[in-house]
Image (tube, rainbow, N blue to C red):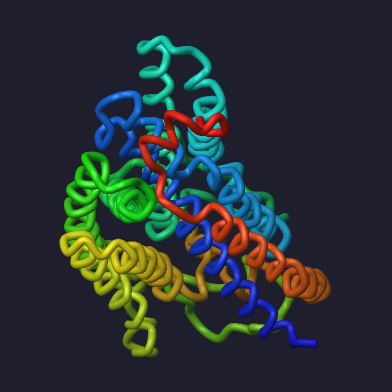
Length: 379
C-alpha cells in the first residue's frame, strides 16, 4: 500500500484527471449548447445541432458527479468550504444545468416555433452559464476565497455572489467559455453533415480559438504581474495529520509561477494549452476535423493542468486569512480513506472508460438533415 504522502499526491492528480475528463466530454456539450442559437438558423438545423450531442450528454455528466464525489471523500475541508461558500454560484450552475434535460426532452414536443425557440435559448443558457461560472470559480480559487477557520476548524465564509465576479475572475470565465466553445465547434465539425451549420461552426471555432490564445496569455500575464499568489512558509510534514491551522502560508504576488521555475517540466502544461489551441485553429481552417478536435482537447487539458501545476500544493487558498489555506498536505481525508477510495477507483474507473468508449463507437457518425427528418428516435 502507498504511504500517506504518496496517496495525497495520487488523489491530487486524480482530481485533475476528473476535471479534465469533465472538460473533454461534457465540455463540448456545453460548447455546442452555447453555439446553438448562432450556428443554426432554422428548425431542421437546430435539431441537427441538438442531436449531435443528444446521445451522449447524459453520460458525459458522470464526470461532473464523480468530481464532486471525489472532492467530498478525498478533500472534506475543501468540499465543506467551497460548496458552502460558493453556494449561490453552485445554485446558479445547477439551475442552468437543470434546463438542459428539460430542454432536450420537451423542445420538440410541440411544433410551435415560439415554443421551440424558447427551449433553444434555455439550452443556450444551460451551456453558456455553467461554462462561464466554472471559469469564474477557478479564477476565485487562484485569487483566493474569502474564508477563515477558527480554532475548532469551523469555516466562516465572508463573501457574496457579486464578490465572485472581479476583472480577473471574469477573465477566467471568458477563457472557460472560449475554450469550451472551441471544443464544441470542433465537435460540430465532426458530427454534423457538411453544409451551412458545419461552415458556421468552423467560423465560430476560429474566433473561439483566437480568443482562447489571447485570454490564456492575458491570464498568464495577470498572474505574473498582478497581486495573486500564495506560498508556504517553513517546512511541511507531507505525511502529517490533516489540520490546516498547522500550516503557515502567506500571500505573495507572482508566487503561482514559482513551481514553473523550480520544475521546468511543468511548462509543458501551458505550452500544451497554447499549442493545442493553435492546432485546433489550423484543423478548423483546413477542414481537418479530427485535428481540430484533438487540438481543442489538448488545449483544454493544458489550460486545466496549468492551474493545477501553478497552485500545487494549494487547493483552496484563503484571501482574508492565508493561514487557513487548504493544501494537498493539510486538507485530505485519512490514510485509510484515501487507500480504500483508490482501490475502488482502480476497479471502476476503467469500466467507466470502457463503457464510454463503447458508447461513442456505437453512436459514431455524422448527423444529417435526412436523419433528423426520418429518425423517430431523434430529438
